[in-house]
Image 1: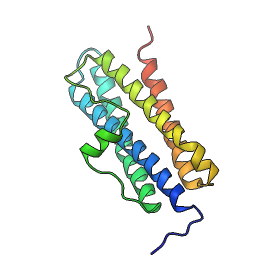
Image 2 (image 1 turned 90 degrees about the vertical axis):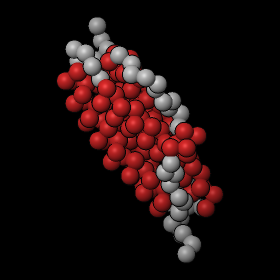
Image 3 (image 1 turned 120 degrees about the vertical axis):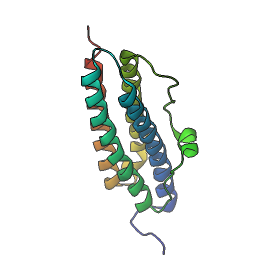
Length: 156
């Protein structure tokens, strides 16, 4: 059945493509955060272990919201590591970095997700896709706040 929600098919496709990149960034950040949760060590262990757990749990919920929005627009959501590797602007981290490096990498990942979300906004606003705009606004707010909180741990 055709989709008739007031957004042209080519615009829905472009938005879904942007959201697919956002999904890939979010999932990649989820994996990185979960990995760091498992492997963090040192004097900040307890603080970071708990903080990373809160963050990966939030990211796990976010990937579902993003994927469901892609589906609502009428397109399949990417769901494999191979697709995420092609779509994500966030690189995997080899090995187990020190705690401070983990924080730096997660700040960079949070900021990358914000940039990806922000890059979708011009089209979303142009075609009056309020549900996607709302999703993007919420995601940017969460990631900007999380980046700030992580950066605050790096202050001397």
